[in-house]
Length: 353
Image (tube, rainbow, N blue to C red; front, side):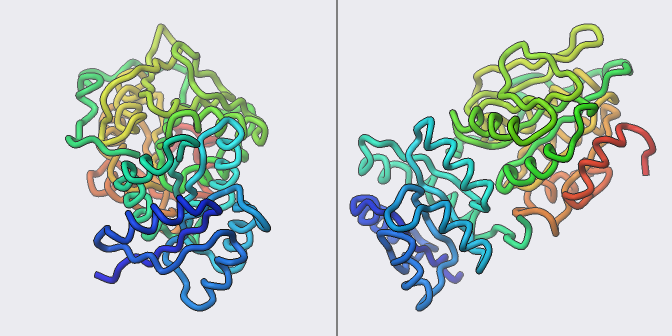
């Protein structure tokens, strides 16, 4: 197979040196260059264009966000952001995702050299995922791939119909942009939403805050016991599972620890299975852009429990992995372009096609 050509852009000589060494030792990856800032990088890229850029955010002469915006406007190229995890940095990285980055790897301020050696699997996975990204449309894995059985038992009985409906959404690579495209188009008078976006810890709070500023609906990082209400979207916290529960006619979320399911925590499979159990035919399940198969089985359980189910279509996905796997299982009732999903949410549960 042709190796993935990678360029590293970071103002830290240590990061450039260590990343070059660890990535060059990986089969299927070729480091074609390093640069201390985006202007140096552009000079080198004119001679040989990379398949994937590993990009820092805070750099001299031109910051990573400005470079990313320029790159996506002129010649879209898969970018993995490698940034420091701080409160301010988290906001900056979220902005990078909104501008078109397809992956993030957080790096600490202390113990950086050791971290880069230890995080090689995470870096390689992010680079491989980015290399497969579809830029026409804009997590560490467990050794054993567990199913949602590790968190809650399979669906046994669908809940009775009520007047209150809700929407469960699962997404991964490319999902930050896709969710923004959907949530910013929803009015306050829309069903409550529960969302799993594969993200590291601490990023989801900043992501929710950013969406809350952009949207007419309320967007929050979920806390244990939060109620699902019309006009509100709850996003699962990074590093924790989120389950839907029901008390009478009201829905709430349960946020809990547990092993990774389908190699993720939070897991879309866990959210979808709990939604099938708690809401049955009162729910709409939507699986969107992302690598892997997390959510495919859970969406099938939702459909079998009477829920409506949708998937984002291939042309509008950054990575057509999760929707494809769900479709193969027979979990998907309809495939829709990203731009049609907000209207489908507002149309509610009526009129199967």
